[in-house]
Image (cartoon, rainbow, N blue to C red; front, side, top):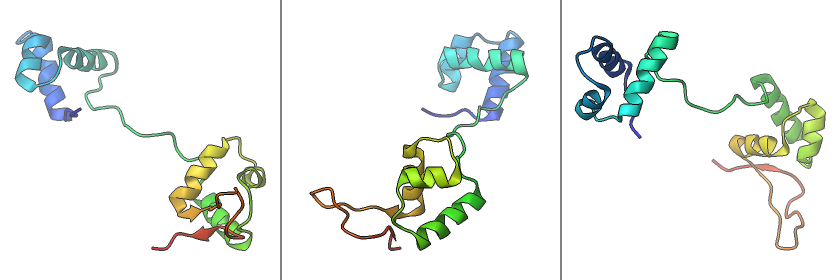
Length: 127
């Protein structure tokens, strides 16, 4: 899916509102769908917005300061469980969110085929 720049949206919306072209004609010219053109016009009429909405995910449940504290905590006690980390920081997020953060930070947790830990502590990924 391609994203339209603010310049393209501006030209399309003004051409549509000035009656110079229909949504179908603009879609054929610009290479977008008529529904996209109508969405841009609606957003402009309701909010005076021509730029795209920001994409992305919700922010992390840990602040930068808490991430540094978490790294220091894991360096001291690398055998903590996700639940213990959650309780230590008094977070209401799910355990999967904490796990994703640890993976993003480069921590790994290995188990062997019997489900037992192969190492006694978490270790940083080699770079």
